[in-house]
Length: 84
Length: 181
Image (tube, chains in turn brown, yellow):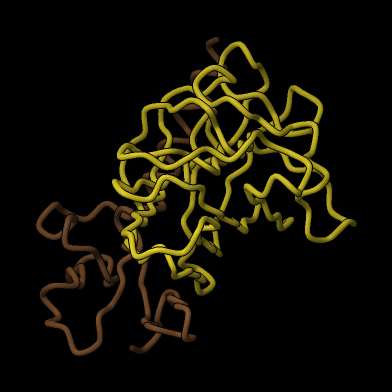
């Protein structure tokens, strides 16, 4: 995979048993393991608005980049602290 | 940006005793942005309060088991913590050992709320990482820069590394490397 988002490896008693690339969903930040030669539809999809890979759960849910969700959570927290 | 490492090894000198696995999830490492007040949320890791919470990025996870080898299935999971944490929700906060976590001793103390081998479970949110492996196996995940598991700089927001097994009743091991922004 080009520009993979991570690497996962399972070590068994006899050495490396399985290794695969991963990517992090651009909308919910969850880690998706990419099975070799799997159907691309099973991985999720590519958001046409933010042009990033997304997980199966986020397909058809609209585009809200995870960075925006982080900023919203932090803004809520600042507000809560400011008003006690 | 300081990098930290936390694990649930009792030999590290922090955290509680490793908890035996069961058919329900057991949290063995939890990391969350602390708050300035223990009463209103998670206590800080080691920095003086009040302070501003920091965003955290988990970039490396290593897991395994340390019981008698057998062929059982163990599910590991990292889920978001969204509810307010306290020492009641997760027992085993390791603030006193926070200087043990830093990878570069020139960096400051951890500001996150960290827990190892919690004896209590708290409500968790969305699962962001999950893997099921044989009890004999171990697993490592490394994030590429920009693809880390991120928790916001908001009080009590964080992640919990958990495990469950219906058959394996021993203990599990886990190491989490993360960065505070």
